[in-house]
Amino acid sequence: MILARYIFLSAIFLTFTTTADITTASPDTENNFSFNVISDIPYNREQEELLVQEIIPALRSSDAPFTIHLGDFKAGDTVCSDSLFRKRQVQISQMHLKYVIYTPGDNEWTDCDRGGDSEIERLAKIREMFFTNLPSFPDSWTPTRQEGFPENFRWIYKNVAFSTVHIVGTNNGRIQIKEDDIDEALQLVDARDKANQTWTDTLFKAAANQNAKAVLIALQADLSNSRYEGECTPEKPRICDGYFLVKKQLIQAAKDFKKPILILHGDTGPYCMDKKFGGADAPNLWRFNSGGDYRLLDAVKITVSPDDSLTPFSMESLREHITPSAAC
Image (tube, rainbow, N blue to C red):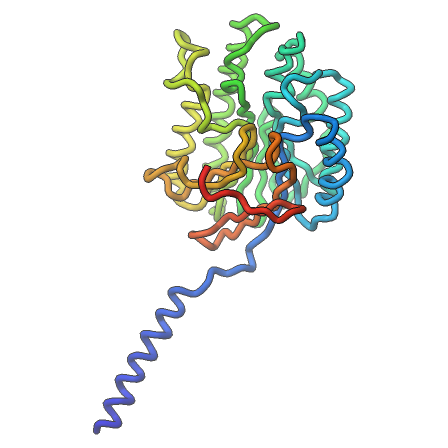
């Protein structure tokens, strides 16, 4: 009788243990994959040598399915000539054997008026040079570009939704307008803001419809780094937070989507990733500040583990294997 009771209790314990093991099992790694990101380089001749001689070869030898360039392919105070743009176009195209996705930074258009160029004209030239005659992406990625704003690009890879959104520093192009009509420039900023909001809304609707496991959004600006406060309005179009609406939209979208979301950006110094951006309202929202900008001069390998709700994203620099700080 005692032996039978022991066997019975042991069987119950074994059942509980087995169930617990299943519950706490490690996430499936079959869906994991990595891709590469680069931003904010080169800013001078030494950085260009490093880019050409070491970083680009490392990117090309990687087995990543694509590379994302987060903008700022030159320093903000250097020339914005067509010849430099052509040079950078070639260099960016060399950052992957097939697929490089680029989103513009402020240094290559909004800041060009520091040298006497029209930022409106330079943006038109960026769109002409970098977003026409583009390579074909695989049909399985369901690649989509926004009409009128071809720099906004969306694709799916291994059931993870990706998108670029054209949001830049210099308060999203609202300040330091030196060579263009200010009203015209601000009207174009407003149009881009509205297009970005529509694009982002469409991204999350598509991700939900396709039951995507995660969403990654690539842009140039550090949305947390505005020097101003409050929503931009017709009465207050410049001295305002140029990222106010997109921050509000992304946090709400993260609350609704519930699955992991990562914002990738450059523009500011820290090489870091944290969850402060979404706060308590959106704990599924991560933010990663890429390398470059005179700090970590390297590309970064990002690994996506969509089935791991605790650590869906991890990073290390491509050449030196440096991981980002856990707090930005």
